[in-house]
Length: 163
Image 1: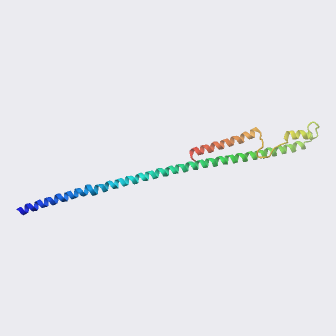
Image 2 (image 1 turned 135 degrees about the vertical axis):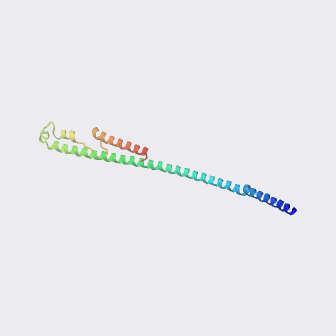
């Protein structure tokens, strides 16, 4: 019986040692490893979020630069169209005046009249400027200026909408 008690005590001690070893392993080896993995995952997630935020910031800066570039290009196109419209209107007005001068000079009632004649026709139709920087009649200039302002407003609206 004594052997049985000794064997029982030895088994109990062995059980306690094994239980202690299991508890030691859990708290000293296993649990810190899990905590370390959680910490590493949290750090990786923070790095990923920081990287994403940085990328988002770069993307936003790039979109802003692209919007500004498109706005400037639109304004440049509007200016070029305005200058072309103005130059075409100058040529048209000069052509119309040249035709009017020819018609006036060929009219026998005006050309043969000592009070009218060539001087009258030149005062009425002469001096038309065909250059791209001519002075246009106000009605014609107002239409071109209005179209230019509308084009600029369209550029601004498109830039604000991000188109």
